[in-house]
Amino acid sequence: MTYIISIDAGTTGVTVLLIDKQTIVVAKEYAELQQYYPRPGWVEHDPEELITKTKQLIENILKTISPKEIAAIGITNQRETIVVWNKKTGKPVYNAIVWQCRRTTSRCTVLKEQGFEKLIKEKTGLVCDPYFSATKIEWILNNTQEDRCDLLCGTIDSWLVWNLTKEKVHVTDMSNASRTMLFNIHTKQWDDELLQLFAVEKTMLPVVKQSSEMYGHMEIDGQEIPITGIAGDQQAALFGQCCFEEGMLKNTYGTGCFLLLNTGEKAVASSHLLTTIAWTINNKTIYALEGSVFIAGAAVQWLRDGLKVITSAEETALLADSLKNNEDVYFVPALSGLGCPYWDPDARGLLIGLTRGTTTAHLARATLESIAYQTKDIVKTMQKEVGIQINEVKADGGATVNNFLMQFQADILGSSVIVPKNRETTALGAAFLAGLAVGFWKDQHEIRHYWKEEKVFVSTMTSEEREKLYKKWKDAVERCKGWSK
Image (cartoon, rainbow, N blue to C red; front, side):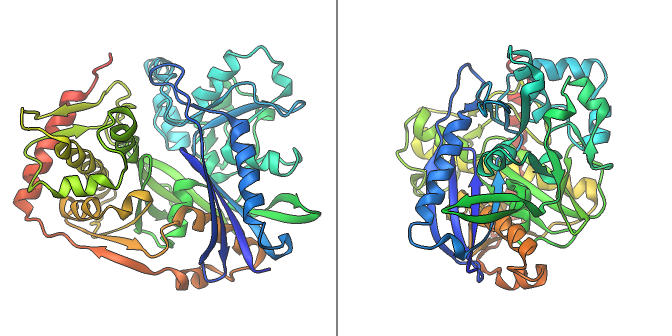
């Protein structure tokens, strides 16, 4: 057994990687997913497209090697995105509702008005927001005529496992379950009170397993390959970055930005951050505090596909570097509301400070800086609520190739930003979890041996300049709040 297959089912596409024991990516296949926007603020995927493309990518990976060389399969996925399907036909009853979708904003407002926010926060560690899965499931169930007795639902990992095991296994892991707003992170079970609140039958939901254990098998050319690792993408990235000790922090720069701080075996309560399960291995559960930025890389996509002011994401660094400073142009990318620490679904995007001299370069720079400012918002909140000083952030995700962004991030934080050699940390985390379950890697100590840094960005900005820039950012944020009310 020479390799692990890691399936990374992200928001914009699916990646399948072949990873060897030294954590080298031997092969990589990628397919983009069609994004559907039926109404403003609504975001959907086609679940059948997802499974078809995933299977095709696995076939492509296995063109040059035998299935007998695969020790296990690991899965990591965009979290909170939900699929409801008929277990008799195997067909979805509606498109997958994506984590970015804001269609249930009014439902969350009603729940808050009825006083349920405190209950939800205490049980799940989450805020009452359309970001999470429960109101998405409720919406689909309220908009289908199919018999509920025939329905199953789950996050993307569940949908993948169900299909890859030929409809034999309906499971999820604790990291994904903890993002549904239906799972009690303290008892580690689906919560009856919350199920009743959202009218979700427990029989629809997957069995909740650990993040590293045997779930089932995928048969390829007569060979049964065990599926043994599952984690939500951000928890997988935390594991892939080898943030195994309490106090270690990573930030994934993808469609959104996601900062996770390992808090050990204690679920730390927070008024602004999310408390979530990072992973469960060998019956030991590790928790994390999380801050979510809804729009990060997606803002760069918007510049490219929406405004069409750039033709590729790579252009942004050159454009931003062409200016000596931001010349007071700020962009608050609240295109799907604001996430942590504001939690304002009614906030909308704001571009401010424009003059006749404003150019594409200003837009590019303001967009990249907005990603770093939003990250600083969360780091400041973590430091305040946990009472620790964060001097180092491990960075991963597609945007880490942007040196302007990484340097500005270090500058505005006043901390080091460390980029690893292997930037596929999300897929790597899923591979690690799968490999540990079958003895491909002995333990976390062995895994840590393979993690290497590639580049370290150190702050060169004065504290006065840092505070001046950040103060204007906070002013811009205040101006965009509650816009769609």
